[in-house]
Image (tube, rainbow, N blue to C red):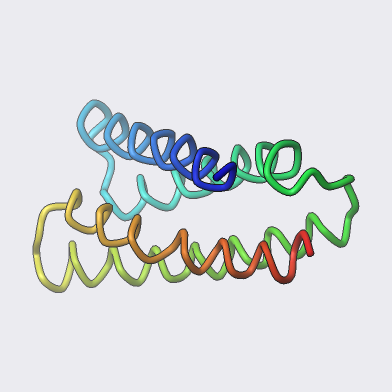
Length: 116
C-alpha cells in the first residue's frame, strides 16, 4: 500500500515535469521524459527509503536502487522512443504505457533486491 502511494506521488511528479517541459518550454518529449525520470527517481528513493521499506541508508542500497532505476530509465526511453518517434503517437500515450510497465519492474527489483 505504501509503495503504491509513493508510486502515485512519483508518477504525478513525473507527469507534471514532462508536461511542463513539453508544453511550456517546448522540450522534445524524449528529453523531457529522461529528465523527469531522473527527478522522479530521486524523489522515489527518498520516499521509499523512509516510508515504504523503512530502510537505513547505505551506499550499496543506494547503488542497487540506482541500478534498478537505470533499468527503468532505459525501458522508459525505449518505450517513449517507439511510441513517439517510430509510431508518431502523442507523448502522453507513451507516458501512459510507461506508467503501466515501469512501476511493476521497479517494485520487483526494489522489493527483492534493493531493500530486501
